[in-house]
Amino acid sequence: MAGTDPKTLQDLTSVTMSNQIIRRIDDMSSRIDNLEKKHCRLHDPGWGGRAGGGEQDPCHTKEPKAAKSH
Image 1 (spheres, rainbow, N blue to C red):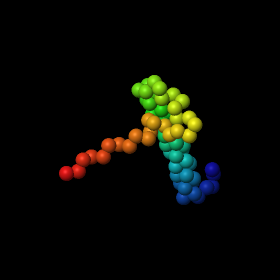
Image 2: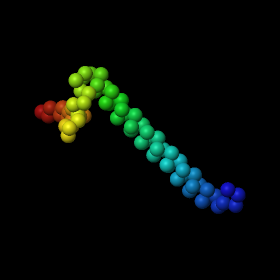
Image 3: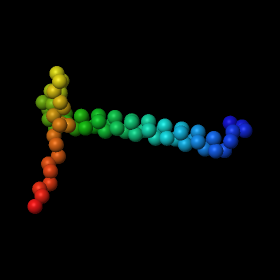
């Protein structure tokens, strides 16, 4: 990139790095989803296939218990 303005080069580098970070986050999100599904299958042998036919995934529909307020 001979003759490229340093500010332009910095902007291009920032955009490239941002895109790489976004791709890595997306990749990690997919891996987390896959691990959660695997976790559900390991802890609930009957889980496989139950989420088909419009049913929601039972492993992901459980709401966290709310803390009791006094």
